[in-house]
Length: 546
Ligand code: C2O
Image: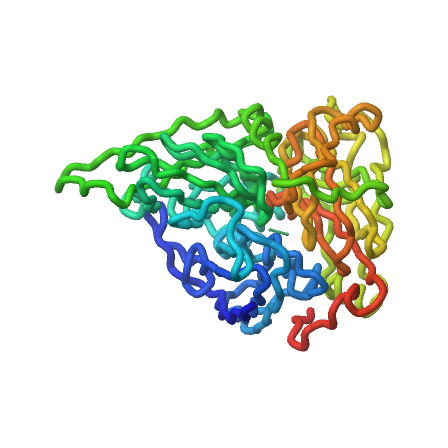
């Protein structure tokens, strides 16, 4: 196994998009940032220098970080932010993960422009469980604001209203030729005729699940979130923010140009969203050069309707692990978490400018009615490791404090989240099941829920309220897929299982960033097991303190 050293400099860089140049926070002047490529079993050492005017951290989305929680990256969870002018070196080993992951800033909305691909090739000497692709390409889907994203979220936090939606979606940082001033810079994705091509699709958008398709080409899905899948074919895929999907594409069409397109899967009825379409161009390497002055218009693919939940369900329910897997049974911690929005009444000391949510409220969000608040003076992991009192409590409820029809007509007065920094404690090795239940408070919505430090099996999903008497018959305990982010069906539920074999403090949150700002998160405190190999490592000497 190799050790890979990288330098990341977080800095303001002029970036021209949609006809204007913006001072944009990037890594090494690149947007998207550099692609990291490793083999399973390798070690990454990334020295991050913060030359921007914002606090920053980098999270390695989906990397298990076994015993190396100090390198996970979410600010105030596993470290204090890297202040402007400071550095921190992340050091971790990839253990039994292969496929596509990504890295991104984990501080406010900095990840809007601070992100990149993290590609894990098979262990040296081993190969893919599918035909070796001739060519591999990473496709990062993103979201672009004309305004500074940090100002967009600050404005939303001040007013209590929903933030402005983005001005464009992007493919590898470019909006594509359906937007103004974008056609010159539209991304070209090369493909080899007659060959198998591997495309690694990553949804790095801030707040939007996306449909993704390519004209006249079918996808064979072979992996997601750095776990292999039993291959299946489809012409459209959907990814929530945080999720990745690896697809094989055969170069079996007439050599020409085909549009690659992505646009919103907008599950929340009546909620505003960016309804534009981003494109790139799939170009056969053997294609005859277009004659001078003749532009060959690429073929445009059909895309599902914005609210086409049937297509989403048809896609996600095809996911299977390649073989029979060891799903934890005899559950130790059986948890039921509601995930959803909330509306807080305007507090008496607030003025009306600060309560611009629906009917003079402030938007909020919660799990089990607790709206997660990050600490300010310590990271949770540091407070845990050094037994610093008063930073968090461990009374996060295993069940909602109140039973009601979660997906029915819920009155606002019934359910107003309470802010808190509450963790749920897990013994090392505990077998955990979580029912994630969407609520229709303000609106039902497909929430991409991500857990740090773990992959989990998705053993069932469905619509309406989870019924513990009848829905257990839907559990797949044979070959469920392993992921790090689950799109909980809109107005529905999902059941996940994992073994708590990674000690530390791990945040679980909705990967729609505006929902993190509103508190749709909680954290697990996983205790050390016996012996050094089951214990969190010591913190690195350069760990940023608050
Ligand atoms: Cu992709 Cu908490 O992160």
